[in-house]
Image 1: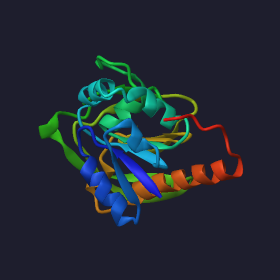
Image 2: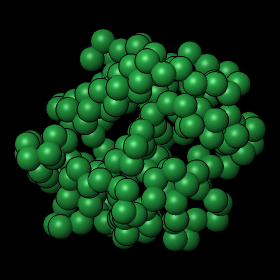
Image 3: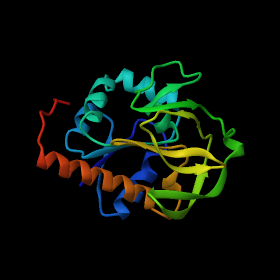
Image 4: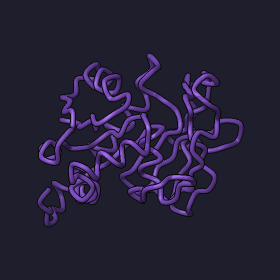
Length: 205
């Protein structure tokens, strides 16, 4: 399996380290052609406006949209902002992949970053303890009916899934527990298995 990590800006290296520890090939994605042999993509934390500007500058927005119609994506912090349907105070249009409304930097500024233990429910009815890091974290203000909440902090959703898309307000790559990344890899495997059973017309990236 090869997973891409968008490497235009932000905390992409840490995601790569976690994936490599799980035995996965990592492709740092800086050009559209880097997506071609990836089975999934992680959009890391960083500065959401800068990331969107760079996507536009290198003409990568449309290839990324094509990729997202075929493969799973996982966005953390700024990555979640990019994947959201609606974001406040964002000067550019997000990718609109997950039906959530986002408030940027709602958990505080950089100096107000914090760590908290949360309860993951990746499998319905099975609760796992997880140490989550929040760094200028966005708040999920509203979820659409097809969005499944996998974790909450103080009763607010912080990890959500819609189909082949996973989004986290926090930074799972900064903890020693790779459980969230493992869950995303299972999403990728599920998609690959479905594609092998019922092949579809693949768009050119």
